[in-house]
Image (cartoon, rainbow, N blue to C red):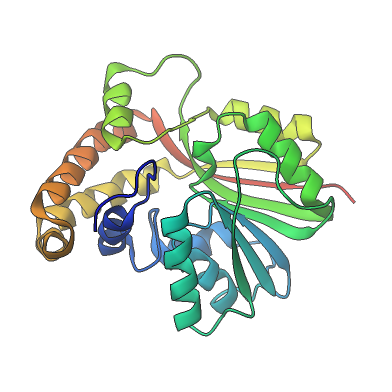
Length: 261
């Protein structure tokens, strides 16, 4: 299970996060948080683009639990896409879910292709929020919906030393932006009915539960697959994350908007 050079979500990381969040999930809350995110948006029979589909669990939930007609998942890394394709095939959903490798940059789809553009905790890796929202707007059909969650930073400007230490511990290319920057990017793209809903209070508590699980049986079981050193590294990451959740500087958020008819 050696990491692939240049990949953030290598097989070891996928296995570690599955132990915490469930098979095929790379971000908090599993199918329950997906359900909370999509609440109020009708996915039944809709064509959905999932930006940063990861290891496949979310797209399966969108089809199985929320009736999405077809989900096109896109990602930039081979390992997560291979995992997603295998999981989707195992679930017999290859006719409802497709996974495509893309390069960073403009979305490789014609205008007005999708009913819904979805993303869960993935667009944090895309620094230019204005360019991203313009592309989301372009590929949505008139009346289409943007439904996403992401990891935001509470305010613009340089992060605190505690936040900088957390980001460094994660080792990810976090392009965190504030709620204000996201709202401005969505407004500039042309969206209306914009909602920016903090999930900090929920994840402050959830992260503590996850840390205790990592220190207990879940971590012990995961260590048999990924090694104790990797479990300990993640315990350190969670220990750095909780203080910046408590301060509000780390602010998981739901983002929703509509492309006018």
